[in-house]
Image (tube, rainbow, N blue to C red; front, side):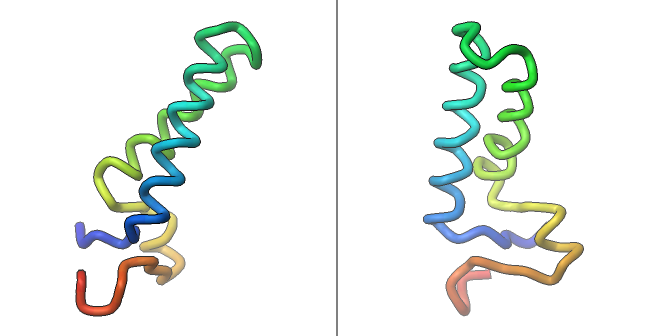
Length: 64
């Protein structure tokens, strides 16, 4: 698994994941908000399987 997420992409994913999970825990958006686990985990491990399948990479050149 090569890293395929750049730092901005990672930060946005972690933020979105935490926000979705937090809103779900607070009862604002319901249980579907737990889908925020996916962007949270992909951001934390710097790898997105969908990016890999599509040949995308947001890492700066030479960083992977």
